[in-house]
Image 1 (cartoon, rainbow, N blue to C red):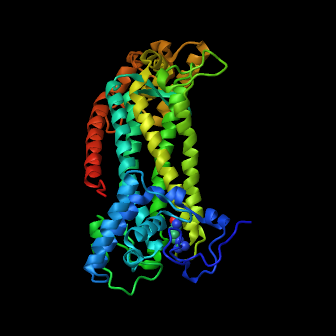
Image 2: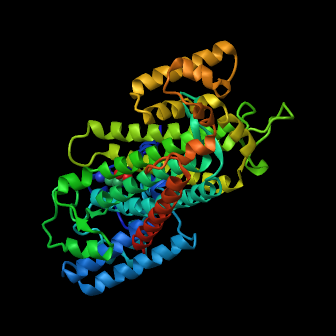
Image 3: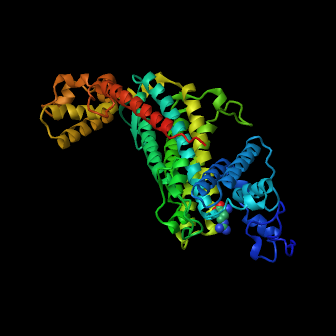
Length: 486
Ligand code: ARG
């Protein structure tokens, strides 16, 4: 059993005095201290916490709630604490529960409890922690968004290089129709664009300033909340104090956006794993982005995409976990919410690192254009072309589909490919088949006939590339405009 020191909880101004110790006869038991501490996780919020406190202190001065000179001292003191962190000189004390208490304790030490003790006027850790996390969330969105753009750019470059590289499109992992690698990669650019849009959308709901909600019901002091919001670059202030301290929807939304990013990365990774197998042989992973086997000397394993695929599970799990934390909480703040940061940081870090490694790896991939072309040259992939050809002759698609299906069966019975059927074989199926039907089996021509928006024809892909480049440019402009400055 750990000892609880009698009378030590809130007395004096010592380095370890609790900020809330007044009503306690005993300090928390050692195990309770360890069990409840979030310092190991939330110490990374020091910049946000200090920037928030500086804005709060300035406001207290401007609003005349504390003397202007004290506000200035608080700001100077907080800047000094920030320097200690930046330079790696900050020393945590036993009993620092979280980053907020650690910083305030240090401030009391630097300025004396009389001035230092004024910082927390009209504020609670409940609105403070909500503020810090919202600030951090905005930064994280911009950083993740930046990585999304980098991966989009890598994909676009590859798509540009391979806009003429023919490969099969698959459904049910069965060869379906010819497409190009460029078109295939542009599908991932489109997914990532939706991801970017979702992150951007989530930004707006994180961009709300909760300070002034205090512990739960707001403050009786004449706080100037708008001023704090302005200084910290928030678009607006929260409108209900109970909601503001207990709302973590913004965390859920960003995690959900990240979970979808990861699902997309996982699908891309799965394709790289498949394509790098001998069975496909579509792609060679660079040696420095693959690993070997400790036992089988010939092996080159796609561990990077496998880990991306695997870590997707963690992100999905964190999203589920966050929702589970919230689902039974009565209003307003409950300590359960402390789990938000662990969850959020894990999601943000994982998503970032997976985006980054793929963006670095993609330009190094060597695609085996011959293997892709061979896989796409199977004449069976042109069956839809033949059906569309009949549609052009006025035959209903259902009937066209049926006739070509019969041709496929005939070819199988004769043990020849669809392209090897004679004009007479086609004629025997239906008089609508002319001799030119045997000319329909060139994948390049099949692609050239695909001209509608979003299809895999060369013209459509060229226009899609231009649209995607413009979208990424717009993304980058938004990122530059929303880069946090603290
Ligand atoms: N460390 C806590 C958290 O991360 C904030 C402290 C609020 N604690 C409290 N007992 N009201 O959620």
